[in-house]
Length: 297
Image: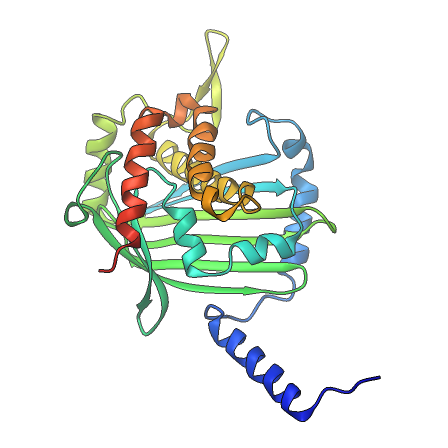
């Protein structure tokens, strides 16, 4: 057997150290988190197998005084190690978040002395960054053999919101499948409440979410109001993650365009809730926004 030289071992150690330094800021993983998520998978199996979404997906929302939360659970046909590798860095998450209609810009940045993301959130149409809302997220990520955890949090969000969170965890269900859990939540005070009331009284008056509340003329009636708002955005974020993962094996030069097409097509499957703009308008706007976020600032 040929033994590695001392020089070779030193090189390997230096390479490993450099690789670790390049990883995102980590936090201690909950040792029971993977089992908890797998238990959730067992609980949701019937709903993942048969539902209104036409895919193994479950979505729910909750409203508490001054707080809204949306959650999505999805069974992915990828092993955990592939999901964790695709969703571990700030830049990868910027490539995910920019697919969302309201994300106008995303860049890896230093936030509160640590790793983070600077994100601008705005209208569903072309917009100058100066007119959009800047949100600075802290970013922490970690992964183990059967579990990954990513946390993006901001003290201040758009339109009078606070305690803004995008949390993603995933656990291996078996050697080839992963259960992903997305949480999107925020708090709001009086200013945010007034702004939301204005939105719901005007352009948002006819918009709905995904929770079925009853039956109207033989068709499902869907939840509206603030829970409808948080459900629509939770779904948009989930579809951004799903579209990003679907194209991770495409040639590098084609991934961006294919992800944009995939996200828009996915949202059109739920046009009652998510249709806002036409395909070419979305594609043209996003191409320009991606080009903008790639330029030095």
